[in-house]
Image (cartoon, rainbow, N blue to C red):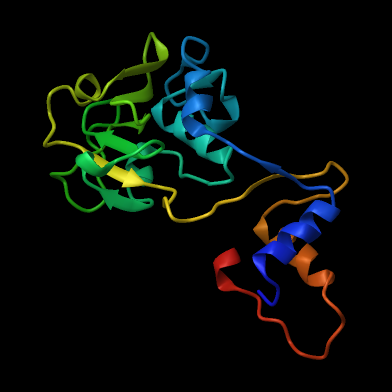
Length: 199
């Protein structure tokens, strides 16, 4: 981008954007005992009705991070982590769950369930009959510490900025934000690069 991040944030603030701080663990804890479990609940039903993967879709969506709808696809996102290195907001996947026979590449690594690490040796997830719960990591894994996959969706050294869009603007994606910023630059005959990673 031909302007600095601080210049871009200043321009967005001038257009009425508000900067949000979103603690995903805190947001997830607010749903314990409130959100109900529903098999195949879409993200659009959250936060009132969720399943394990739509809960994660909803929570990460609060930070502007789009996750795919099934835990097996979510397990392909982000960076692979070892359990001893996970931190708050990382995801842990296990083979038990409704979709225990789904895999992407290796039939020995099926994914059926997902939960979010809290950083307090607990994991928040959604289960039938109870909805959103917080359990110890050991309980979540069911004693099967060898059968899990952990992913870091938001890199700890990356600054993801969450914004609240003013109602008078129609922002559908980051492309619209990029275009808003580009329109504020002085007119020039120099072509501007349209980054592919915005698609």
